[in-house]
Amino acid sequence: MNIEQIFSLVVGVVAVGSAIFMIASRNMVMSILGMILNFLCLAILYLNLNAQFVAVMQVLVYAGGIIVLFLFVIMLLNVRDKGHLANKSKFRTLLAIAFGTGFLVEMIILIFSSASTRISFLPSEAAQLGTVESIGKVLYTDYLLPFEAVSFLLLAAIIGALVLAKKKFK
Amino acid sequence: MPLNYYLILSVILFTIGVVGVLTQRNVIMIFMCIELMMNGANLTLVAFSAFLNNPAGQIFVFFVIAVAAAETAVGLAIIIAMFRNKLGLNIDEINIMKW
Image 1 (tube, each protein chain N blue to C red):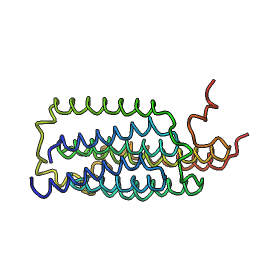
Image 2 (cartoon, each protein chain N blue to C red; image 1 turned 135 degrees about the vertical axis):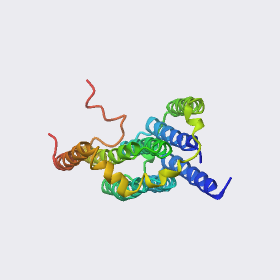
Image 3 (spheres, rainbow over the protein chains, first blue to last red; image 1 turned 90 degrees about the horizontal axis):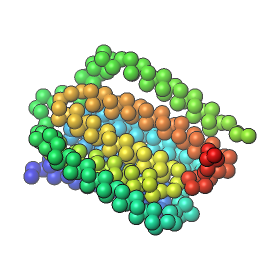
Image 4 (cartoon, chains in turn yellow, brown; image 1 turned 180 degrees about the horizontal axis):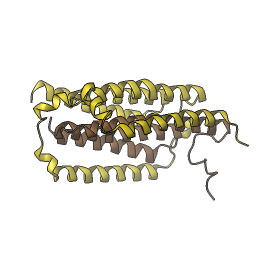
């Protein structure tokens, strides 16, 4: 094992640990902090995969925008402690964990029996794949129509959020 | 790292999100777990894109991130509207859509 593999293994373990911390923590602000750590670990993994543009988008949009929105709502509604919302039913928790474990085992068996096992090295020409230049070239030629559709979607989301948060239902 | 490492990591993250959605009773926490599941799927897309040397996966992740941002804005607005109308945040108690 070389240093790069050890590094990505450590980052992956931190990502899984922070995700578990996120759903296990009783304080919602601590859950948000776990979520930030998880998003940053994923950004590092994207950099490892030569996807620089996606890594920067991950930090800007997720860790910068979405997390701030979540924190803002938690502070606004003052629901930091979720103790009173705690799950009383032990049976439901056990059922959920059993279902999750079953799904995980099934997917891991599927991954190891698929053709992806044969792919073990990044292609050497992939270093240029994720740069802003090459992503922009593809985005503004082949994927121009979806790109414009996304701008409409974001406009609709802005208007929808304003209307929903403003109105008092009767 | 081989491709399988990234695939298994993303499946683990997705499963943690699923378990979170099934066990949590707080609407905001369920929403955060959905974001976690989306991140797991994004990792799969980026890994395949890098290993197969095809930019389509990373373009798709770009669109997923844009849709996730729109979804978060509208979803948190719905949560604020629920809170203002005194429905609370516990999904077991929110059943006005039930017939």
